Length: 251
Image 1 (cartoon, one colour):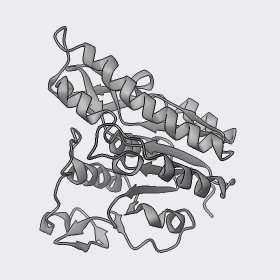
Image 2 (tube, rainbow, N blue to C red; image 1 turned 135 degrees about the horizontal axis):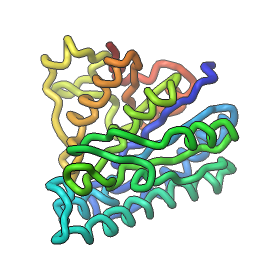
Image 3 (cartoon, one colour; image 1 turned 30 degrees about the vertical axis):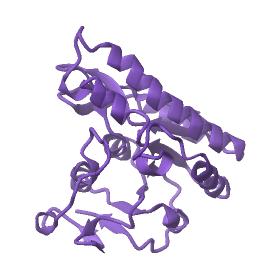
Image 4 (tube, rainbow, N blue to C red; image 1 turned 60 degrees about the vertical axis):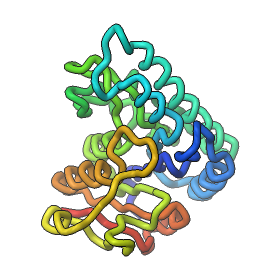
């Protein structure tokens, strides 16, 4: 097995009831924590989406339109929503014996015009070397031009994969992969993506749903790093480097 870092993104629809109002999927988190705990030698960095804990707040305060005096309260409200979810994810991991710690992008990352431009990655790498699993999440971060913006977990995955020279990158979702007219697309490249009909999330999502995900992963592929999108039920297959029946995004 590759001894480099594995980056694993848990979609917001996995860790919350995304169609609801902030409900955390505690049972699923417990199952996921057990899967990760069973692989103690895994050098893992986790990133999770906001789901129903963050997207509604960001939309209510129009965070993506820019932040100024009129809507600055949305920074704290949105961050607290996603930070609460992060605490639940970390608690589930620790309850199963995984030495995990939350890392909040609000304090570690910076954006410009809605795009992540910097992230303090050295502490994250040091945590992994100590056998600790950092857990990051989609968050509101300060933006050089807009005041603040929402950075998706997918943006964070792209940035960290390159900065940490990750060995493997996986995104667990509530669908079996990228779907085109109901069928799983086994492989996506820049040459083939234009022929696909990829929809956005039907739930409240200020970060672009599947289209936003593919945009980030194609940029990651441009840097020479392939990524895997698969159903959450196949997470063990991904971690064990087996066929997960999903989609691979590559150069």
